[in-house]
Each structure stands twice: as structure tokens, then as C-alpha cells.
Length: 402
Ligand SMILES: [Fe+2]
Image (cartoon, rainbow, N blue to C red; front, side, top):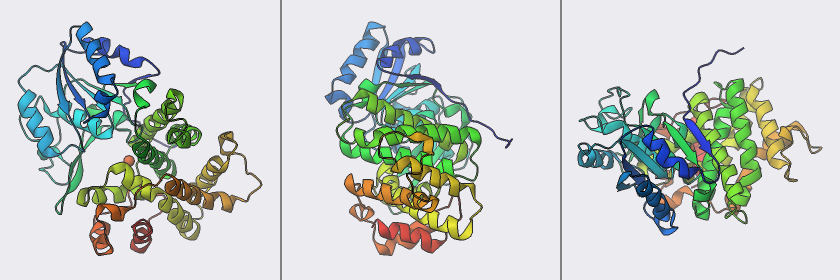
């Protein structure tokens, strides 16, 4: 058996109506005083926020509200910590997309400390380890993408020429509880559903193909990939208002977070960090726009330079799953009469078609030009890619999506 370690997973509550458990879960953990982090608009617009506030009121829980309308910055975290540090907050609750959950996670980590979060950010701050002492934190994802609800890091962004996208990280920062309720997911708009869905797909594929994958992470990633295949296109179209379809995508995202926390990520996420630091490119778009190219480039590089890699058989299995258009996932075993090579190749081609069909934005829309590529490439790492890609191969991925 391959030796492995496995990161802590939050207590998970998954299913319709699970949001109603929220007051009880808070009262089990702390005083009835909550810092509630939400996004800018949709939770309020669709009436969910009022329903949740009514749940709090009925349970005698006091609420302070904080808006996180973009990816959280160092300044955003420090300002809110200064405001709420002395107000006896008991539990932090974040209800929203990946940025909101990262924001809530960072506040829960820093509210009990006097210093700036910058001191603890990897690679840019003082490099001080976080103590792991934090407030209880409950995450309620409303988009299905980053998997931040099950990971131990909060991504903090500073966009600009000297920009960065760096993590605050500690084992204890894994949320204490995650609630996934399909009723909260149906209002996610189509463009965000598409980009976040492809981010979740990337976070399933990259751990699945990772050299540090284990049988356990493979089982988790594959389970998420099956849910993605069954629900992704429906969630972006006719099934958008179907809570079961939305839950399928939320399940895929949840599995992606567990898989990436334990098997790592590859070249797409290696590129997403500098791209998102230098340009205002949402994380889901950066990953969604590049993942098809990564599958194409990886397939070629694996065949040329790593023909013994287990990632070859895995890509063939993935091609069988994705190309099986009768809706039956067939556990990736059906071959549709096509040879193995065809199935390895089709992964990138199919996802490319979906990228076009769903109009995932190109990188040029956010200001990336050919003159910027060297700077982006300098900040890119292969991470746990199944095969080390050279600079020209990585450049070709960016050029294809400029
Ligand atoms: Fe991601």
C-alpha cells in the first residue's frame, strides 16, 4: 500500500433544508453572537438572507454583517479585524462563493490576534506560522467551485503590478462545519456557474492525475468527476433551477476540495496564481479557460516523455467518462468502440468544446497580452503536474487562450 496522510475534513451536512441546522450548530460552539460574511448582492436579492436572519433572530443569536464583494485583500481582513476584535464574536459564518468563504476563514483565523494577516501570508509576508488559534467557523457555499469550504488555507489577493495571491494556511483553519443546501445554490448566475464548475473540474482532474495521488484521493476525485459529468452542462442551462442538479455540482466541488487538499494541484493552478495576482481575472475563469489546454498539452507530454505514468491510463478512463453521451457514467469503463489513444485525446477536445459553448472568457479580456507572458511564466510552477512541462508548452496554453 502507498503510504499517505489525510487532512482533517469538516463535519459535513449535505442536502435540502440543511441551512436550518445553522443556529443549533452555532449555539453548540459559542456564545450567540455571530459575524456573518456574505457576498455583495445575490443572497439579499433572492430573499435567502432574510430567511437566514429570521432563523438567527428566532434562536436569540445576535448578528454582525460583513460584505466581501471580491477576493479578500490584506486590507479587508485587517480592517474588519480592527472593527470586530473587541466585540466578543462567538462564531464566524460565511455564506457565499469561494471568496466569501476565504474571507470568513481569514477573519476566524485573525480575530483573536492583534497583528496583520500579512505577517502570515506565504511568500510575501514575514513568513510567521499561524498559531492555529481561531474562532469557530462555519462555511455555507452558494457557488460550486473553489472547494474552499473543506481546505485549510484562505487565499488573500492583491491585484496589480506588484500583486499577489497568497495563502494563510494552518491545519486548524479547515472549517469546523460545512452546510451544503441545494436551495441556496439555484440562484448562482450562468457565467459564474460555468467558470466555477470548470474550476471544480480542474480541482478534480489535477489531484486525480497528480503524482502524489493515492487510492483514497482517486476514489474521492473520481466520485466528484462522475457528479461533474452528470450535472455540469445541465447546471449551466436547463437544470439551473433544479436543486438536485445544483447539489450534484456542489458535491463535485466538495470532493474537489478534499482531493486537492490531499493530492495537490497541477499546471492550471500553477498559472492561476500569477494570472490572478497581476490581472483582475476571477479564479474560476483563469482555471476554466485553461483546463482544456492543460489536458491537451499534458496528454502529448505524457505520451512523449512519461509513457509509463499512471496518468496515461487515468486520462483514458476520464475520456471514456466524458465522451459517454448517453448520460450513463459507466464508471469510465465503456470504450464506445474507440481506441485508448482517442479517449486520452478527447478529454481536452471535449472540454475545449464546452469552454466555447459556455463562452468562458479569454485571458485577453482582462488585459493579458503577449508582452506579459514572460512575467507570468516566471511566477508559474508545475506544482503536482503529472509530467514536468517546459516553458514553451506552458506558454502555448496561455497563447491558445489569449
Ligand atoms: Fe481552483
